[in-house]
Image 1 (cartoon, one colour):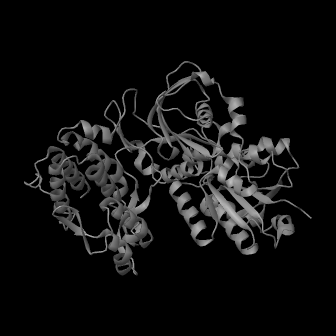
Image 2 (cartoon, helix red, strand yellow; image 1 turned 90 degrees about the vertical axis):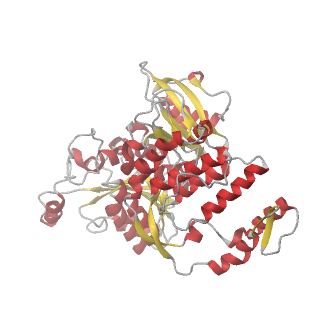
Image 3 (cartoon, one colour; image 1 turned 180 degrees about the horizontal axis):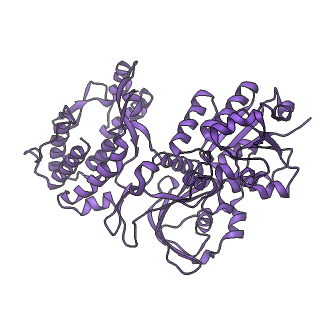
Length: 556
């Protein structure tokens, strides 16, 4: 009787499917996942990439704790039964050839008895294989199963389906970083279907995936001490923003090919996240292209990575590229490279806004963000059913906290239908909106709205302008397919209610006029007039109006 607590499958992690290629090399066969996906799966430096990190972890586990099953395509070109398969997909993974070898072949050779190898000659891994007999001891048992490999929409999905139907007691999981397909779009479509249709657990984080199986994660510290060329005293950090020792270890790993790194903090402290612009020198003395590193909670950073991967092919050079990522303990990091960012001062949209007298200098930035960058996503918009109240998180459950805040600000109970927020300014009571109105306004049948991929959190700190006036977006944690004007609304909210600080009664009165004017705009597709309402005399509110108007014009 076997006593393993978990099973790890690898699916078709073979040279003919996943070997690294140079960018413009021809594909070795029709089933190879291609340069970009192979690079994402194996990493720019294979010995530190996702698959090798997983194998290093798996082969160190006690066989009683983790059962390893490697499924490989294994074809006999002389077999009549395989003739149709090879005719349809072309020759690949022919038995005893280099193309049929695992990309982690060294572990197989050094540990010949550690894993079960299943030779599959078709799309179903249970047909004409020994897989059913290998799994027989586990039938009827509640056991955790992890699946890695390629293709996500084919062999990985087929294996998940077979296991789910044959062994319903199994708890199955896949990891986005450890599975791949012919394209990122097909990869993510398949992951969404695995989650929604088969109920498979889909992890963004490698560490979360391995913890699901055995309770621990790959030992990054061992690889830092083995591979890093940089000494800790050559890690020049921003003295104004001290970081933890754990985050320093992460930086040592991300810059393991360097001999010196200078870090400037762009953002730090919020929710434990740290954003650094880096200037690094490799071990040969070459100045490397500047990068931006974001460090934060491991699982949230992993989610941001996969959210960004969903759109990076569309944005192209208008967005950064992920050159590395790592996880250590409960922390994770992404290393972004920006195609045209050079050395020099980097400013956020919010800081640049503060230096502009009338806001007209921001027109080019807004054109770039909404027209050139996000516009690529918006062009693929489609109508989908969407409950906007739920989507924008207007929920009855917030009623108590809203009432507490309103009554704390006003200093008395507020039970009337209206409240006076300032002498002479009466508005509807937001307490009652959350307590009663939301129940009546609930959408029981979602209405179709325009949707596309959106950044999801386009605030003033997530747009940066480098010294060459290149415009970039950062922080893709909230990227998703959603309401097409979400990014517009988020940035406008920042402009009106965060950038524009109200400090006098006169400014308050002008702010009320501006707010009423914008609320009375019934159709966002009709451009606002160039000049703000005549009643507004304050220059900071005029600037807010002009920038607000510009964002609407670009999007419409």
